[in-house]
Every structure is written in C-alpha cells, then in structure tokens.
Length: 595
Image 1 (cartoon, one colour):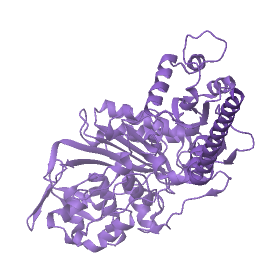
Image 2 (cartoon, rainbow, N blue to C red):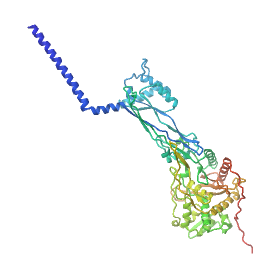
Image 3 (cartoon, rainbow, N blue to C red):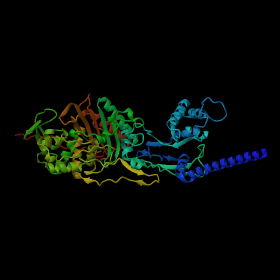
Image 4 (cartoon, rainbow, N blue to C red):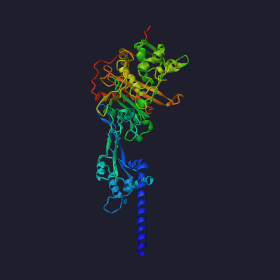
C-alpha cells in the first residue's frame, strides 16, 4: 500500500513537471510568435535604430582670393567631438575610480587633457543628457579641435567617442577687404562676397552610415560612404596690396577729418575693381566687434546726393549733344532765379566772365543751370541711364542699394535744375566711380567687375556673365571733358593736388546730406569728395574718395590730399610712366572787347 502511494506521488510530480515544462514551452512559443510575427517589424526597427548610425560628412567651403591668389578667406580643418551617451551607462562612471578597467571618468580625464575642458564638466554634460533621454545617441562634447587634438583623441580608441570633420572659416588678411569679403554666421553666409557668391563657395555635405556592435564600435563591412563635395574658389579682381594701402589712407583721412566714415574706390578704366576701402572697417574673424552699420560696404549699399562731382556728367551730356562748346562765353552771376526757382553758388562773387569750361572748373551751380536751359530732360535722363545711374551694378553685391532713376521731366522745376549740379538725385559711390570709368574709357561705359571667376572642385573655371558695354558719349566728348577737368587739378589752388609729370583729371564735390525723412538738408552733415581719371593722355585708373560729415575741413578741399596720395600710390605700385604730352590749355575765362 505504501509503495502504491509512493508511485502515485511520483506520478503526480512527473505530471507537474510535464505541465510546467509544457507551460514554459508554450510561453516561449507564444513569446517567440509575438516577437517574430506580431512585433517583428517594430522590434527590428527599434534594433536598427539603436544599431545603425548616420553621420554627416562636411565638405570644405571654397576660398576667396585676390587677383594674385592671396587668400582672403578659407576654411581650415576642424573636428567636432561627439559621444553616444547610452553606451556609457554600463561603464564605471567615477572619475576617481582605481580599478584597471577604463571608466567613463578615466576617458573624460584623457579627453579633457586634450581639449582643455574640465572632465567634471564633461561628465555633468553626459549625465544631464542621459537624464533627458536614457537612450541618447548623440551629444557634442567639444568642437573646433585642430589636427593635433584630433589625432590625440582618435588614438585613445574610445568606442563611444566620435570625431566629425567640420571645417571652420578663417580670414588670414583680417580686415583687409573685410567689408567686401563679408563673413559667415553659424551656418550661413551673412554679408559680402561670402553671401553673394555662396552658390560657388558652398560645399555639399555627404553621409557616412554604419552598424555598430554593443559597445558602439562600427561593424566591419557595414560602412557606406557618400563623399562630400568641396566648394569652389572665388577669385576677385582686387589687388590685396593696393587694397591694404588704400584702406590705410582712407582710415588716416577719416581720422584727420574727424569724419563719420570714409569710402574710397580704385577702378581700372576697363571696369575691373582694384580696391574698395571703408573706414571704419570690419574684421570678418570678429564681425561683432564692428558696429552694425560698418559691417557692409557703403560703396554698394549707401546712396547719397553726390553734389558737384556729378556736374561732370551733366556737362558732358550737353557737350555731346552740341548744346555747348568748351570756349563758349558766359556771364555768370552768383544767383539765379526764374519761374519760382532759385539757385546760388557756394560763395558770393561778382558776375564772372567764364567759358563753359570755366563753369565746370569753378564748379558754378548757376553756370550749370544757365548752360542747361536747352537740355531736354528726356535726353538727359537717357544719358544718365547709359552712365549707369538708376540701376545696380553687374557685381550683384549682397545688400547693394537699388536707386531708381526718376523721370527728370516729371520732377518739379526746382529739382530739375538741382539735378544739373548733383542735388535731388542719389547715387552710390560705386555708381559714381563707374560713371567716371566711362569718361576714362573713351565714352564707353563697361560693367563693374569685382568677380574674376569661380573655379569649382574639379578645376573648371566659370567667368561671370557681364552685360555688353555701351557708348554714352563720343570719344571726342570724353577726351574734351577730361582735358577740362585737368584744369581742376592744375588751377584749383591746392599744392597737394597735382603730381609733377602726370596729367590728372578730377572733380571735387561738397554735397549737402538730406534728412532720412526727406524733410530737407542737415546743416551739420556734408559729404566731401574727389573723383578723377589718370593719366589723361592714357587713362588707366579711376579714383574716388569721399568722407561723410567731416569736422575739421568741411569743404571738398579736405578730400584732395587723400586723392593725391592714392593716385601717387598707384603710380608707384604699378610703375606708371609719366605723361608724354603737355597738359591741356583750355580757356576758362574771357575778356569783353573794350570799346
């Protein structure tokens, strides 16, 4: 009987084991079915998400260089140091741990010794990220690592630490050409050539994907790389050496004149820009150190009423139309009034016996009005349009101001007269320099060229598409006008104007500055300027220099020394030979026949 009970209990145990085994197997089967059939897609996606890695590969932004290849902007190799926080959770965290296994703290001490960061701060960053997201796969610990730091971190061989190439922009020439070159923001170009030529300069990112093991190490054979494409190189027409020296001179005279700002342009008579100087300037390596208003290029972005340097174009248009002759005799008082208009010269004077040439040389507002009585306003508008006023230059500079040319015939009578001597019309410094280019190029206006070309990563060069030049005035008109302007340099009474042996044509200007709301002119602000072409017998360069709100000398005479020094600089730098023909001798005055 006892044996029977033992067999019964043994059978029950066997049955229980069988039942439990069956239940356990059933659980495994159900779980396996759930994993493989019901939740397979979701679980696979989750596993792939934890195992697969995608990294952006940054290409290198192209350089900006001057006409001789001097680098003004370039990208240098720098690396971002990132970590995958989730792979640090199961490692010994303590910085002060003493066992032989590499702890997170040990790794951060080594990293901090390379990057200069406090390892406790690095550890705090990882903890904060894990608290935010326990499965976090990305955290940047440091950026801007140079090649030495990159190699040192790489040699540590820490599987959960990654290094990503991320080139950074630098400007080796500092503020030289800074207002032209522009600068970058965190991700995008913000100003200057960096912005306007971004299509050439910008790199195209690539991608690197791979699967990794449990400790974060890439699995061999899983790496797929789509390489990045580097940006192209932009070559400017400027000469960095001349740019530097013109900037120095512009800053010097801005300071001496105690002016609000100064702008100078040097251009060849074929329209290519040699230098554009601003004062104050900006260093693209630290643009925030400059005031917001000083970070662009006023040569393109600021429009002013030009004043008397504009008279050159009014006078040339009248000469070209046959309305005046250089030796035409005029009696010029210092005031003019008629049909509700009133014009006066800058200074009172008796009635002067000036020729038409003398009116331009002596910069008489009244004389210009009297000469312009027969000038059709539609014809005048057409001339100004061909000189390049009223439209942006072909440069396409970022932020270039659009200054529409108004229909002169639709203006009130007073403004129609004022335009003849440079009031009631606005222009940028670059538009003015470009118009003088036409006078130095035999009367043919050519587009301004600042960009010589773009060379892509494959070495293919693309030159900018420029509009065709157009004739504004005849070659004879251009030559005759320059010969008259030569007398401004030789007869103006400033010893610092002429340069012995060289024929130079120039026009001075002192312009009133209008209030921003158009309510009138600010009596405390003047724009003084000089613009010219040289040598007259073989025109090669245009020079324009202008100063906003000078305090020490408030007339155009204050800009003459700067113009002189810039012309002298170009003569020396480019070894320009002296003129071989005598200076012009156009009569500026006439004498009435005695009875």
